[in-house]
Image 1 (spheres, one colour):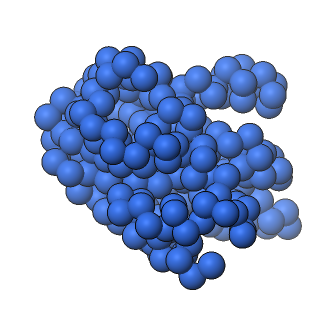
Image 2 (cartoon, rainbow, N blue to C red):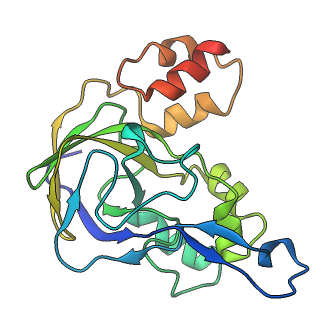
Length: 218
């Protein structure tokens, strides 16, 4: 992928918010707290070591931290989802991502990719593990399973250098030390226990430490 092909289409942030439907009997209507329903950012936004300004995780046990400072999702997936879900207005940020990115996908983003976004420096750390909140947010029971089955999971960044970021900024590839470890390939290994490349992936030093430990325990 040429270094100047990727660009941020949209940036979204959200804070933990409680949702509740009075008298709800349906599981999807019961009270829950999430920052999944993110809103687009207008203008520059500060990207810190563990979060964008105005963004916080509700579930800090499973989300957030230095290896999950920002969630990315490929803009190229949205036309497919809009058609498959019959929702032509399905918005950027619909999968809870902070950065909706044109020019990158799970097939082209690699573990350890180091990129410049303005003055910030970021590094691809791991795939996103789709969780139940995707289905609950959109009231589509099998949506989380479909995200995983299609491989349109998204991926996380760690922040090496903090700085301001904004929509329409290019994402410039500075270094690609592990071109073999695409997010798509990592997903294949993660969700197929006993995969012959499990040990090799666990040894990749720029894979998020939590995933390295999980793979090593296999």
